[in-house]
Length: 253
Image (cartoon, rainbow, N blue to C red; front, side, top):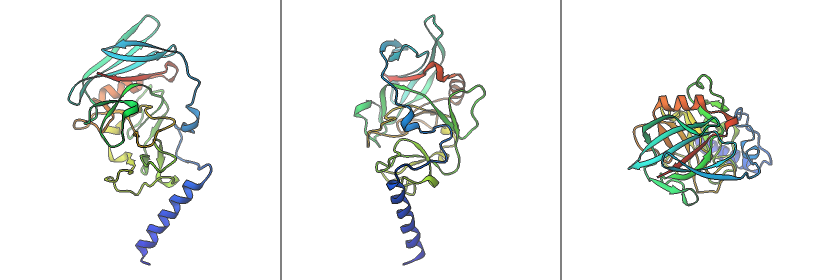
């Protein structure tokens, strides 16, 4: 057997052992510790309002909202709102937002690899970035390291989570063209300067529905399913979000 074949076999064995482990430990989960198990909370009563032309589902503790109002093509108006007890006030807005190249689709009907952005209201509890966290940012923030991936491997128990390749448990070596390939975060230095995780298909993901939906910095145009906005908008929004105000993002037409 050649050296290359031996190396490939070793990688495959490592992956199988990681999947078989009862409780794998991710040494790189500083800000996302036990994210798959600790995010589950009792359901709270919700109400529905409209902000900026978008329907929003709120619970009584939500005081910060980002709305994404699809205009045409892949363009959208993205607006940050806050409520300090005297009604909802617009904080900032941009007409230069973008959604996925596949347009909008109801969240439960979304399929991985279609470039669609899920309609609905989703919590935003954490963020990450290749750049340092903005000053005054309070959401748990992970500074991206070499080897960090967002798992999109449907055979992995870590589907739709951030994970370092050294921790194993997913096929990080698959080529980017493969359906089950995971996203190497440092490959997107512009877009992932700062990214806020949108809790679509989390924390109990449905396989093949999609993984890695974020609010991030604009790239060259349409996204692969995320929502993007200008760099200044993302920086200021991330700096202003507060965990105690239960921020959500509402995506609609």
